[in-house]
Image 1 (cartoon, rainbow, N blue to C red):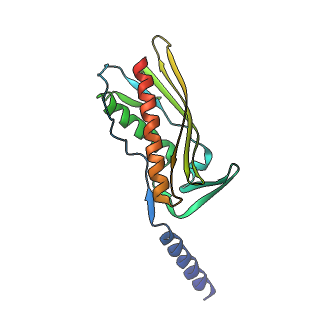
Image 2 (tube, one colour; image 1 turned 90 degrees about the horizontal axis):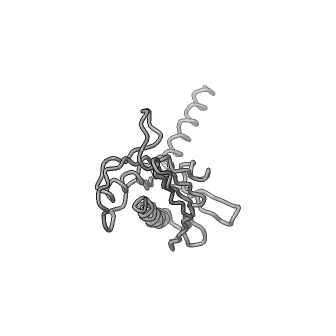
Image 3 (cartoon, rainbow, N blue to C red; image 1 turned 60 degrees about the vertical axis):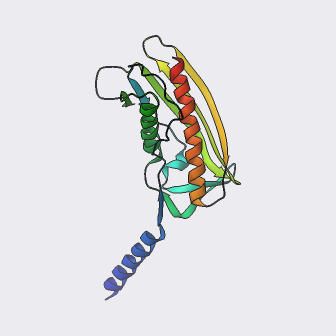
Length: 187
């Protein structure tokens, strides 16, 4: 009898905790480029976007101070952020250059891409009504070893509800996508 009560209690807790999350968000949908660049017939390899550890949790992180992070209840990411942002950047670059030859890198073949892109996000979080995105990125021509390296930083105002935070994060990453595309165009 005690085992049955214990199992029912555990089952009820699982149901209640599963119902607590009712808002799931993604950032993997690429923004629509404002303009496109001429097709260069080059293969572009995009390394997995590196993100801070607090973005590996499914809950949406909010900074209370420079060293205090909390997670919003009732809302979560529906995807892994590093994989989602990488997929989004690949899709955006395909649209921007009107070229399907943009792939995740490294891949399991011997060939190298013509251009390799690396993005390292150091801060991507809401704090006190603002979403911050700080990153560094590199676009490298693998044949000539010419490189474009940049630090990127942008902010967007937000209210502190999950939907507004995600919208501001979406707009911030769209700016980063455009910045990376301009770098690729310089090569």
